Amino acid sequence: MAQQLIDYPSLWIERLARFGYASKGVVYGIVGLLAAQAAFGTGGKTTDTQGALQTLVEQPFGQLLLALVAIGLIGYVLWRFVQAIKDPENKGKDAKGLAQRIGYAINGFIYAGLAFSAVQILLGSGNSGNSNSTEDSTARLLSQPFGQWLVGTVGALIIGLGFYQFYNAFSAKFRRELNLTQLSDAERKWVISTCRFGLLARGIVFCIIGWFLIQAGTQYDAKAAGGLDEALQSLAQQPYGPWLLGIVALGLVAYGIYMIVKARYSQLVVH
Image (cartoon, rainbow, N blue to C red; front, side, top):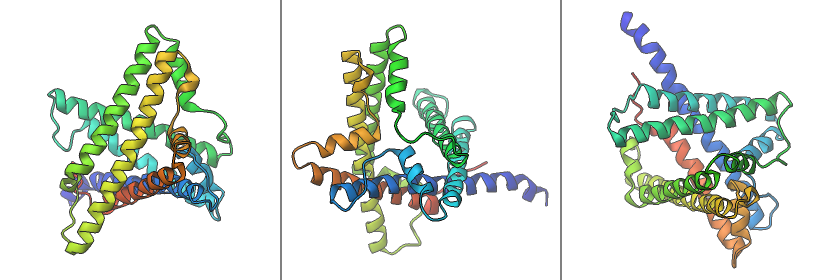
């Protein structure tokens, strides 16, 4: 009985973490689906994660769906902070381990902002998607001492994250986090290929966003910055734009599937 009481909080943290991964997958799936529709001329639009939340609430039973996603995002944030503070994966306190744990915390703060946006939309106080939060944040950074260097550094770090997504996709290191023994060989191959495709697409988007920030820093112009929506728009404006946008959009859908796979098959260590 005492052991059950000890394990009870851990069980709920694990459930919230899995629900969080699934909610993140839903958000990215919506972004990718809308962009794919825009690319293939069947409606849709390019948008970011906040735009995906706004789209979700406009659907039948949208308030309920968005409330569930908001709870899931809060669970995801909680899990990221548990990873950063309690270090259940034993990343350690050396330079590499601390960098990973700091990365978890930063990711937690980013998705805390998205969860807050979801709550705002539910309460009817969310914005209509007209403001550019990336541009606003960039303008604040530029106004600081050495602001141009700060913005450029953030851009370079985001490009670095993009290349890490490429590395993760090609090396398939993410397989270590998943327990796919219940699946057949054919199902495992399909799942791994889908996850790789999703990571590649996310890496491309990160690299574009990072480049936007470097441009904003060198030009001292916050308007040159852009987030996920602007990255997708820039793809559409290139030669063979609809094809490029369509491929990356489907990749974002694949990334959403990857998150749902993590929700189901991740080997979470919670203590």
